[in-house]
Length: 545
Image 1 (tube, helix red, strand yellow):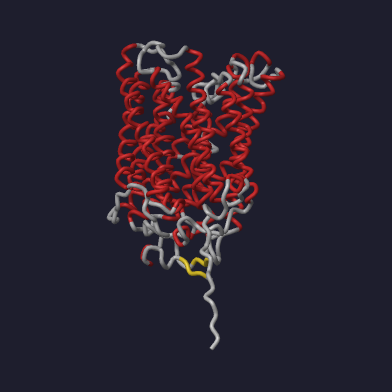
Image 2 (cartoon, one colour):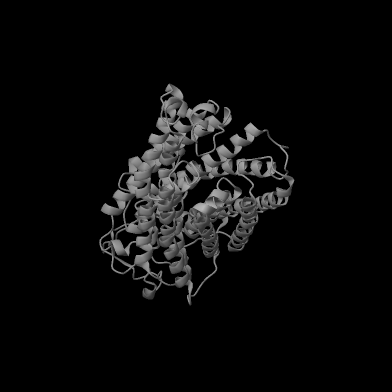
């Protein structure tokens, strides 16, 4: 009789424990690890931007300049805008959740260019370090829009350094978008047709087109600004024969599409969350998918509505006004289809769904108030008032950040393999929603009454609304800080999540939590439509060949 010793089969290594040591993380080419590096980095810059926001609201609690001087206040809101927009909002979902999930969702083992993916993170960090250098050496006081001739002639000496920081960080955005486009085109699993792609992937595909086509325009604009300020070449300064309105055209040609760079990925998150927690395929899948592309296309055609009170002609203003109303249509399609998906659905109010509902409400308010700004007559009254500040934050904070929090809570069990406290996370979601509305809704009233933005001294009759806003910011801050506590706690003490704790469809839920280093042991073959809940919580979405 011949016997053989049992062969020990090594358990598959996940992306966390495959290697140990800081060096392995800093040199990794694993898209999941790079996503975690981004997550840590953008969280740091979010905290820095939040500190600036806190100082702004403390100053505005009283009508007088009690806390900081005028020039310091200018630097506070400028650095808040630069850090939050270019170092948090633009990369928040694509660089973290997009990086982590897109290969998993399409059945690939990694992104198309792993080395470029790591390079994009290092470029982002370099841009962030350059921004921090500007911050600690004196800051910049132009506002995040860098309007000329203030930025090209009269501002302090850190404009070029700030422009260089944003110029560098922009390349990270371009490389990430390029990587996503090539990956989605070339690396989909067998059977993963375009109309079997998750809507999260569609949203990132549209976002990537915006990043690739729009970001170079901002880079060129900042380069021209630096040349004018450093070499006194007449481009934007009228004293040198330039045109300051040209700067606004170039800047907003990027910066309005940049709004959709920030919001489209969040829309992709909401589509996934609503489908999962309503146990239904999204109503109008094709319409939602194409509306993402339509938003990307229209996004390049509406920059002129930022110039209604400039020297732009009335006829050009009328065209941009009409186009601005048209761009609302694909956004409305998404909201209507999300609502239809929830109608008669089996809605489960877990934390990601609470954030999704908050997103729909706040984004809708932000979108509807944007129509006021798209009307030339109203815009003349509301331009550069707190109405614009409130509208922008309802889109960016109420939309992009709530979408980010919905996605982070939805995929946190997949990223870490651990569940978080559902009770604390629900409390946090409610606090964020209440605090946000208390912070920014009074600013609509302030803007209607005529309080200009970027002023830190104001008439006493506006104080009640500013006190409400500052009190709301305290509540919002508590709500945003709570996830740091319970998510960190879950890393060690959270219950094991399993591969599919939400019973969702999609390839990312067919692999381990956390995913193995190679994502899939064998290339999956997709045999069913996206969101096929009739197949039994995704069990028949895929077979393995």
